[in-house]
Amino acid sequence: MPASLTVNLGERSYPIRFDLDLTDEVRQCVEQLTAAGRKVVVVTDRHVADTQKERLAAMFGATPVRLAPPGESSKSVPEFGRVLDFLAAEGLDRGGVLFALGGGVVGDLGGFAAASYLRGIDYYQVPTTLLAMVDSSVGGKTGINLRAGKNLAGAFHQPRGVFIATDFLRTLSEREFAAGAAEVIKYGLLGDAGLLAELESARLSAARADLPAIIRRCCAIKARIVEADEREEAKEGGRALLNLGHTFGHATPICTARRWRSGSAPPPGCRASSAIWARPRWPGWRRSWPPRPCRPGCACPFSCPRCWRRWAGTRRSGPVRPASSFLSRSARPWFAPGSPRPWSRLAGAKSARLTRRHVRNRRRHCPGVF
Image (cartoon, helix red, strand yellow):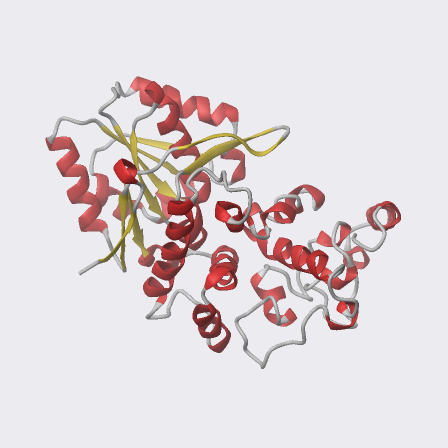
């Protein structure tokens, strides 16, 4: 029996279903909508369509599917226009329903298209990444990126339901799973000390038997926050708490020439926010930050540099992503003591000189912070 959770927002309330496999539940939902005379379409990306081909067919059958390019580039005005054209070409009216099957990018893009087409149609979220399951699929925030910045065009548009099937996570890369694991840790920091203790005792992985329960706890925390402040209007606390790490995190891909993905960026953003918060309040913060490493095998990257490097997708022997250009030395968790700095392994002396100059300029203009 699938577990469930309700986001209570009055007439906009909706259920979230949790289980290892929800193929039958999604198919039944599609059949009920079709039997009621409502047109159903699917928005997903090419990567999900390739890796989940059989499940996509089992869930939606001959339902029309729009395939978006994978990656953050899909959250753009041109792709948004192509999705709207697809909905119009399929003849959706105000009774039409859109299913967003994929990660956070697909959920944001499909949700915003549903919010905009004919001034709003219903849609369902079927997240396939851990980050989307615990974050973007719940709460009704939808949007796309503009040249001026991330998520600057969007709408608050609550889904009619969310189907969280953890079996999707078995096909995720370690890096993609790590991006969602950092968000799980964020929920522990926001209001569940028991969850944080569990994560410190055993590393989070797709094979954990209690993963659906952990995801449900994260969604319950977010649901409570969204119910209290749906449109992020509270002057203190409220839904803005969910932005922990995102302010600095969204700057990471830009400052690192897209070497870091947007999904992997919030963890160093949390680290930077914590360092800046601690500085004026605690005179000895430079001697005590970052925290000492946890015991070996700790799953908490905020206190274990070794785990942090692995979760953030960097290795001492692998490619280096020089995010140090905007973080202070005390907020660089990806460097172990004695490890070479990122510019020492960049290809070519010219790139090394440019990177060192960029770091020097950042420190000169923002002393003590960057």
